[in-house]
Image 1 (cartoon, rainbow, N blue to C red):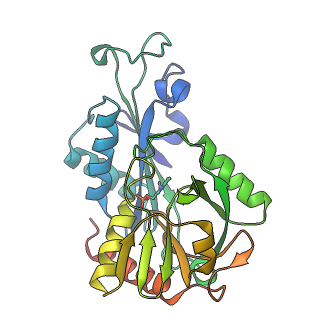
Image 2 (tube, rainbow, N blue to C red):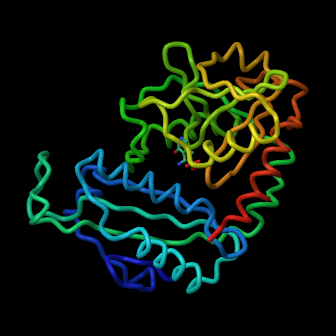
Length: 285
Ligand code: PMP
């Protein structure tokens, strides 16, 4: 597999990063995951805009123009012959000489830019979507700036492990009695014609897939309600689902061992998945 590191396309075994990199020492970095369908990038602009915002919020700048970033994404897709899969991009504050909590002078630091691909044939035609996934609820103990897509993913990783241990697929996190989001996705319930999902704030990541799916839902005459909801409401809901760049729209059929609706993927979730795949293929670059 060919990867990209700071201007070079290299075999992955030859890729090197300093042990002083602040991404490695302090999780001082941000990332994006963009999916690839038919060899093309889904929602690239959205990911590029959010990347720039994450960097800005952490007093970092974009290391290159959006066009250059797009070219690197495309080149990696081409080199690795990805038809369906993902591109991971990570930008860290980079490597200063000494470890220090304070941000180093940007003049004396070179950001580290890394991209790699993951080949995932069958991503769109995922059999899991026909079954749906099961989630558990866990306390949300993450920091207060979840709108910044940083690489500090330890608690979400622990959440996935708690889910696995409980025989489930993923976890929905709860703060002050309300669902924030999934470990690596946004969370939704459906009540009648209403798609309900938490409003945007610093409490959750502003999902690129979320923005697209809510737009498609409105276009399909579904009602969208952006508000907090509880686990009790999830249990009473007709349907539930998650969205993310790598799962698109994925039905959720149970929470904490209780079936949601009929315990099978809901019609609205499946319809939104269909629309999302169809529409985003059309605008892929
Ligand atoms: N919330 C969290 C915590 C995430 O990690 C992700 C995916 N990285 C999402 C939501 C979904 O965002 P997107 O649709 O942009 O992939």
